[in-house]
Image 1 (cartoon, one colour):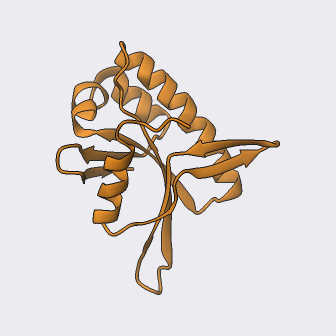
Image 2: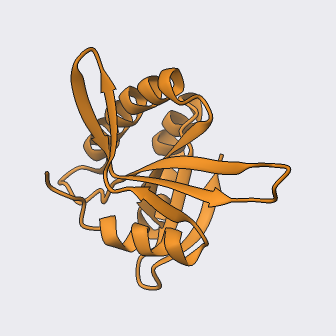
Length: 137
């Protein structure tokens, strides 16, 4: 299975932010078919709140067309989200993109409209620093 070029960057950023990587990759199965989200993680919170669990799909947007990359990422994200919502409703799915990709293509216009319309949760990372820049619910 090929990993996105930013896979390890996002993994390192999550760990630096206090997340425990529980799955690499995170398998999701439905109807006898198994798909793989890039990462599964959890963060232990205060005892009264329990643990927060996420799955993260990492996308680099390095194709010839950012809009085509968005179409492919959105289709994958929505398919994973449907399965996760049915099987693990307490786990949230995030699409991880670099700050540069977010600022260039997803923060405004058609990118923003599409992501907001479908309720895509974003994890924006800083590539050079291997840190999480921002979470967008």
